[in-house]
Length: 140
Image (cartoon, rainbow, N blue to C red; front, side, top):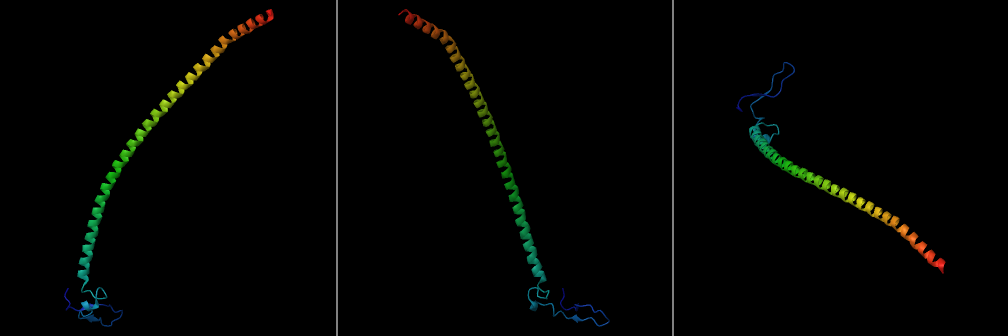
């Protein structure tokens, strides 16, 4: 940009003459973007550097997220394996409880059957003892 060339800053709506400037409006005396354009290249360079920095940070974050996601996948696999083990242990415990329950039920049925048999065998003995006692008492 050459600051010696006249610049157009407004367009008239009638046949009035177009005002021009010798470039004095666009100098560093207007400060950082306060109407002047002298430091625009410098500002653009800083913005481009910031954009590059942001792109680099985002790229790094993306790589970190990929690593974290892979770690979460491994953790998820471990939890799935633990779930399978719990399912297996739960099934084994359930099977053992059912087996113990069946054994207990069978033992209870056997004990009841043995008690019934004892009662059945004891009834004639009791009847015999009562009869014998009756005969002994009736002789006296």
